[in-house]
Length: 91
Image (cartoon, rainbow, N blue to C red; front, side, top):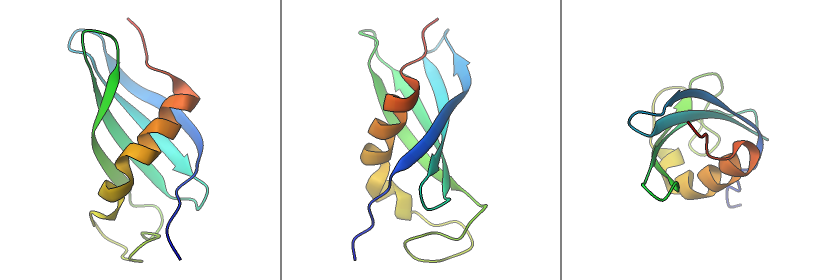
């Protein structure tokens, strides 16, 4: 069975318009919560630079209850869904 993350809720938790960095916390359907860090380019597009799983639930992939890098494989998928929910913040 392949893991298919589905974002149910996302919100912008920090935004720095001076350097174009912002963070989104995304809640997934399987109760996993992830923090995504983004940078914006001069055209206004956002690119996810980092994803980390907040340690509220065990990892849905490896079932570890501590830090792992499993969510890195799904960063682009989760990032696209989170941006659909929130959009790119503007200054």
